[in-house]
Length: 113
Image (spheres, rainbow, N blue to C red):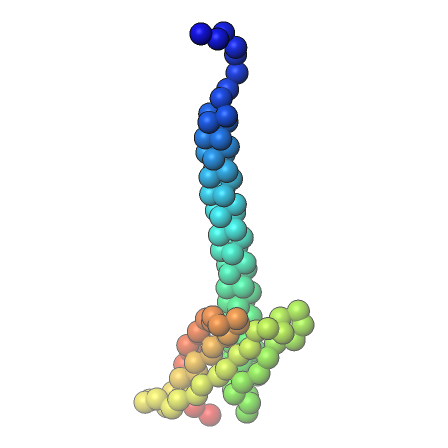
């Protein structure tokens, strides 16, 4: 029997396969987290833009235009305003901010003018 020390080729290959599997799993997790962070950033930006637009409508009144886009650096965000007359002299204002196939909605009520 030989007294040589070291690893056999089979042991090295199994070790490399385990390390490769761990690296692939970690890269997948990092990629997933980057995607979640990007979507979260867009959702926060959309919510802030929507609140700004809703406040603008509250201060200046309901605009004649019912849709539009935001200026730079938010050119990939757009907004749409739906007006519907309700009971008791109220108007339902539905504001939708959209981006990359996603969006956020805001609803408020105003007195009919």
